[in-house]
Length: 346
Ligand SMILES: C[S@@+](CC[C@H](N)C(=O)[O-])C[C@H]1O[C@@H](n2cnc3c(N)ncnc32)[C@H](O)[C@@H]1O
Ligand code: SF4
Image 1 (tube, rainbow, N blue to C red):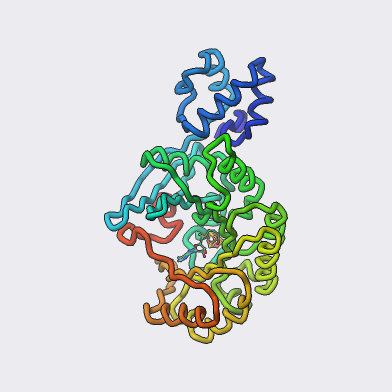
Image 2: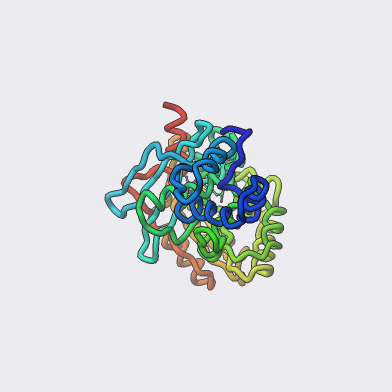
């Protein structure tokens, strides 16, 4: 990326306005340009047809539009799920997924190039962290997919590669831009941010009092097992993480989602389910059970269907709402982070 240039898509309307006022332009120009970027989602300054050629030339010289280029798109024949590998302007690549539900189109975006959290079952972390994505790079995954399918995107989940709370400031700016009434205006309630549990940042996010859903990747019912799967547990004890979720609910009134990847023989026993219901019992929450997606670099296996069902039943008996995540795009499967790895290593 050209570090000298202004990242226009990451600017809010106020910042865009002051930039244009400095150039001697009228205030309404900012609104026009903001609309071109965030509503019409143009890929080139020359598409801004009600902007003078002179101003377009200045924008081209001084600014970048940050448009992601789809490198590959895999489309599921089973359910229309699309997996995109996008090329960033600096040559890095990130992946995003479009899932089609009856209630609308949902996009899962990446928040970083790689990840430094080291979770044992995750392909996104195998090559470490390169950098966080800019707000524009997060936004444009959604814009590019919306344009590709020619339909509105109604839901966004930040559950692709990367730890969003490890890229906190850019994440918050991204959220503000995505939900801005002058832009694509996706409702905060239709946005989910998933974290491995960076406790201080979870509490800071709670204090923002946004209406987004927080999803916590728990994956274990006690500290010992969590530590074996997720190095982040060395920094934050499991009860601290659950307390931060309670705090999030207290501050925002939003029900927290717990993600629990079931790994065969590791965290899927009835005893695990019992311990989990004791850990989070009484909370206003929902548990998302995810059959682990095996990656070739590790020897984790999926739990049997019957084991998954028994786990879910045990939670439900304890009064905890639990669903098993439907596997979308099974025919184009590959755990999160694997497309990018394939791209990286070929
Ligand atoms: C890729 S992470 C990104 C968001 C954030 N870093 C987190 O950990 O919550 C999104 C979710 O995918 C899960 N995940 C990662 N690799 C997986 C795999 N191979 N099978 C199933 N779930 C996986 C993570 O544990 C997490 O719950
Ligand atoms: S699960 Fe999330 S936090 Fe853990 S390594 Fe993968 S992307 Fe990073």
